[in-house]
Length: 360
Length: 30
Image (cartoon, rainbow over all chains, first blue to last red; front, side):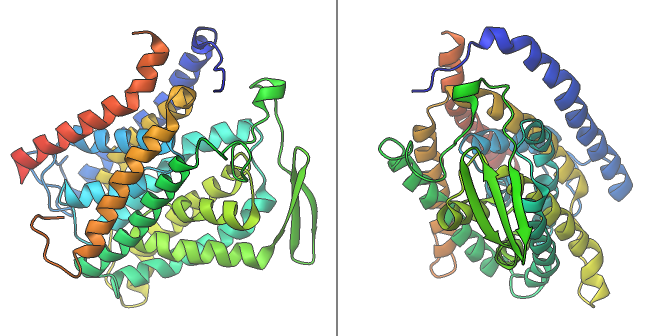
């Protein structure tokens, strides 16, 4: 068990960090939500007046709460809010038309900014590593929305595809929770943070060691990895297509790919995954709103206020998770969230083939 | 309950509240 640093000694800096970094972000997204609602609809929807694009009545606090609890619980197990917020929006809040995809994409766009600041400060930052995966993500973000507006336009095939993604995430979490005790300490992909030896404030940058002939070598601590640019690009593009067609960040696919294929430790991954999610979501949002109509397809604009409100909760939730992760029984949580996600995924997949006795 | 125990329980409390809120929403708005 990792011996956690005393909470008491770090509290003043945590309070300051919350007040000066997180509160402004949270307030800004909340205010943007109100502005967006007035700009798009002329009023702020709530439990009485439905969100016009979403077509559902839901109090604003519930949308904020959805962002907060999905952001918090999913960040604790190394996932992002989108993969949980999307099925919750669809199945509980009944926001199941096409606009749910770009609306959740707005949440996945805004959510990682708090984390981005933290990772950059701690040295988990390397633009050479992020560049080609992000360019791939941008291309994927241009293509994915076209899939959503054609092949996945109807609710059933969309739910089926989302079900596959959820089942993948769920079984992945279950697998990790089962293997958490025995092999986590040795396995590739575990958190190789420098905190243990040099204190939590130590900075260990992810260095670029060489960059020639389409190959990139990065180094972190004593390890080096050589990555091929076109493979990074293709990975980013494929993950980007799937993620932007569904309306999620793509970390759920990117992280297992990096761990399984490149054997990269978790500490290094945010340098690529966080910028990737931001770029992909931004391009996805632009494509849904502006690029689709340029090619004769109908635009699928997001319910902007919905995305902003959810993101304000999401930023708060994922920040709380990052500060309290050490104290949480991660394997048990992975087991629970993995089981729930897998069951929802399997139900979504099944709903295409059999009539379920309840609404999903 | 000390702070560490509370933080260890917090995700499960949050999930429990999430289920309650979801049930509330389904009852009121569906």
